[in-house]
Image (tube, rainbow, N blue to C red; front, side):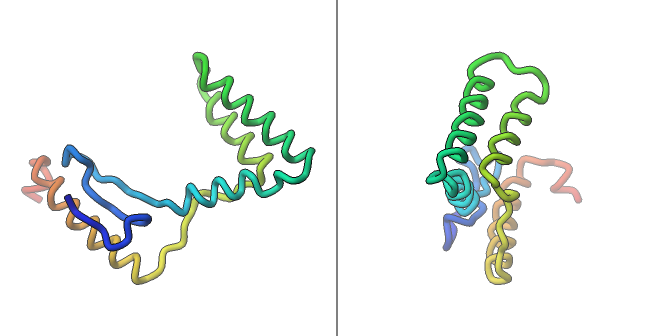
Length: 117
């Protein structure tokens, strides 16, 4: 297993060595912070709870095409959530590139097209 110097923002091999795993903890942190950012305002809290209830209902039953996306978008809209993006420093960009290169080297063993390229 490839071990990162900075696990909260890293590429590693999956346990089966057939896939890579990208870990970006900052997106989860930002999502939760943005979700509860207006929680102290009763109307905003009620709107977020209603959107989460709708999302829960969608998750509990059979879904029509686009229904999950619409429910997720509704939560994002009422919570005023930003796009799930993280800016990456030059140093971390180089580190992530090196990690991904190491992961790709292992994954390429199972891809005959990649080995001949």
